[in-house]
Length: 399
Ligand SMILES: *Cc1c(COP(=O)(O)O)cnc(C)c1O
Image (cartoon, rainbow, N blue to C red):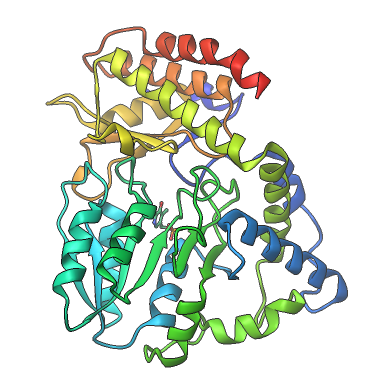
């Protein structure tokens, strides 16, 4: 059944966990003449966005911006700090951790992959034990995904730092914040991270096309000796010219206008408010899922993602068939199950440019979609979310 008329008016609901909805303000900022990226006006923009990104990463350290998807920033983190054959410790939190591992192998690194069941975050005790056992200091880096976008599980980044400190192991600490920065609290400096990786199209509310590294002093020192081949991703030339606001090659000028606007919006709201908004929308979504009688993929409530919720389909029902009905009937995109979760889960993105009513609409679309697709469920999920949002709305207004 294709209800094509539903696509002719109103807006498309992009409820995947990235790319996220781009606010009109950001779209208008991108709609600007493309200027000379070596001219005087550009330097002002370049400096402003680099300073803004430092605030978002909560770091005094260097930040670089690439014209690439997040995957590029993954590669940059590895090739700038490591040498062929180096051993990297990674943890199997889900599809994205798996992809980063595959990249490391392709680049000629060795990877020890701590196995996981895709329903939990990283266990700091396991990292500590592995580092303590590494008396020969073979492990050169620990790489963790903060918010595993495939599963809706947040790993305890600060606790892993403490575990690394207890083991007194010198490995670098690299964290993927592609789907957490700008929606979940993150602190590059305070949490002792050496390289943080991010992309533009999730919490930062931009289209795809920008990626970022925040580079701590230890990572910068490691880059002097790192022998993996690199050219486009090389921090050196980027960092040499960035202080003046310029780039060694053509940057994505119009996306940087968008970034400037998105940063203004995040700072105007206040980062703590941004994080609280995401927490609240995550809680409302989980109340809806429970009321439907469906199962949340994330097993540990301490690790629930404020950015997205992955929902398990009842046995015998395919998540992609359900998502197709939701798209065709209600003009809404939900996230698909990735990797081994293909067909088994759908993901509700509630990050980026979201407010209470857009969340209510999304949850209503899901509830109607469950009925259309004949998925067994109880009614009242959208209502449960509304009740929670109403209860907490006044309190939120006062903060
Ligand atoms: C989206 C995402 C990526 C991949 O980023 P691309 O922009 O698609 O290259 C990597 N890690 C996480 C956690 C993500 O959410």
